[in-house]
Amino acid sequence: MKFNTYGNNRHPIMIMLTSSFCSADSLEYLYSDLAQDYFVIVPEYNGHYEGSSDFTSRKKEAAEIIEYLNDHKIKNICLIYGQSMGAEIGMELIYQLIRHKINVESAFFDGGTFLKQPKLYKALMNFKQKSMINKMRNQSVDEVVAWKSVDQFNKGDNESVRPLIESMVKTAPIITDGSIKNETEARYTFNFPPLPEQMQENIFFVYSDEEKTFKSCFRHLIEAYPAANFKTIPGYGHLTYSVEKTDDYLRVIRAICTRNQD
Image (cartoon, rainbow, N blue to C red; front, side, top):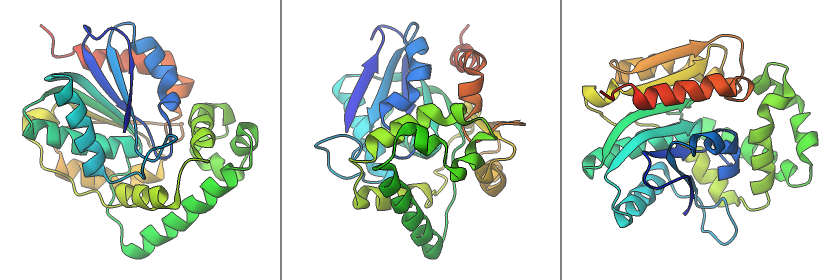
């Protein structure tokens, strides 16, 4: 795993976790602003950059982040932020951070899958994602943004998914079949790690109310983490609110970071 850092390391520390098949660049529209006030750590997952081994699993990717924090003697995290698969890794990371006695103040997760699916479903998704990545290897960002299959994410606004697509097109030549299989496994084997109520109270989940993942996993999330905070936003696609309303979104992130301060 490779770690990208932005901002002054004396500032409060924020960890930002990307979606499937994305490099750190996919979150640049957020961390470029946040780095003014926070020290932002954006891990590059295994399998997502030249010379790395395959993506491993939620637990192992989270464990490498823990190792990095311990190596740098970091004992307090202001915020863990995650998009899509990054939200699932983020939840596992919180669980491990608590066990390693590293303090986590808050977390904010957007569009997390949080599902446990049968083998047949995972096999189907693995096939679909392999086909998608293979197709991306031979197309430009503009061509991929125009795919009909992208419409399910953007609610008709193609530009809202551009940061995500740009990053995926960049990593597509690097992603191996092994990484695709392991990321599929990571996305569809979520086991809802137990978290204390005090931690739950400082976790925020946000979805578009028309997202497939929202309709599939929302009830299970509420049952597992009843003390957490849940917000649905009408009229947007998967992760697109953060792009279309970036300034508002950044204000929310900052408000979450400062809500427990005296």
